[in-house]
Image (cartoon, rainbow, N blue to C red):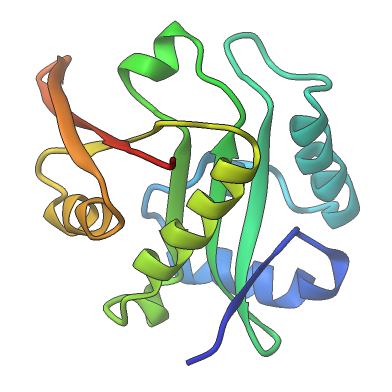
Length: 169
């Protein structure tokens, strides 16, 4: 399976919409998947604004969104925060990602995380902070498969968050 990481673009609108439909009611990761896509061009502009650090809501930091594609199909999404504020150091980290439900279980999350870590390294991020809920064993395995070392656990309102660090040197 050959896939590549690209910046979001208009030509994937149809695939993006079917991805969102496939997610149904499940919580969407990373957060840009929650952006209103009824005006696709405006959504792409918003993603670009986030990358440039423009028009950010309070508490947000600049971040880049990437799409993992195979042929003409959008199969995964990652978001790389360029820096961390105090809140994101506690829970959130540098990278959030998700794989389209029909493509899960194929190791694509490891590929997506590794490709996003390459982008982080190019931005001078080191170490990369990657967090997941303790009960999300699949995410924890993925993070460890990409070099993540458990740094700490934190109780966030009764939910344990594991904080991993990935050395990118």
